[in-house]
Length: 169
Image 1: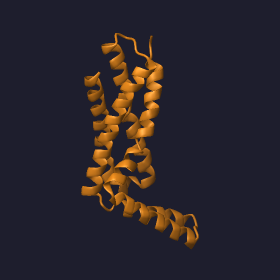
Image 2 (image 1 turned 45 degrees about the horizontal axis):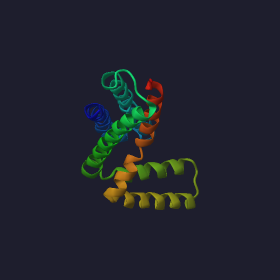
Image 3 (image 1 turned 90 degrees about the horizontal axis):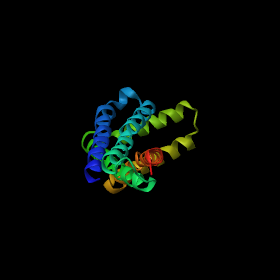
Image 4 (image 1 turned 60 degrees about the horizontal axis):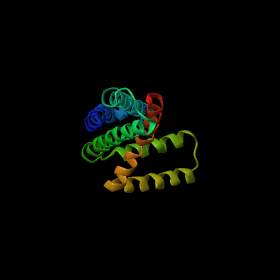
């Protein structure tokens, strides 16, 4: 089990990290709105390795049989490794190559509000919110927690679906 979890976890995490390094530096060209679609698509694609990992565990270790609980456990471990790789990639990108990411995001958010005809009070509230977010992101522990919260719910859903689909008694 350990070998399968590590192999598929790092394959998943490696794919998500490569996709992040390939797309996030070009967020100015992609756009923040499209960047979210590209980013979450990359997360979903990388988390397909959860399914393949659980299937490999079922077929190669358990002789074609696995309970929902065991499949869920294997999938969850793969997801946790993948999310850890995702977080590590973001921390490297954010703190070393893109320390102005939140400034650009704040400018984009403010521009969207202005284009929508927001009041000055709404603009001031958004500016305060973005300044608070920048302060929070400056703390590596909060940054890690918030970054981990991006792919983990998707990984949990993929794990649940994989465990349900692949269980065999």
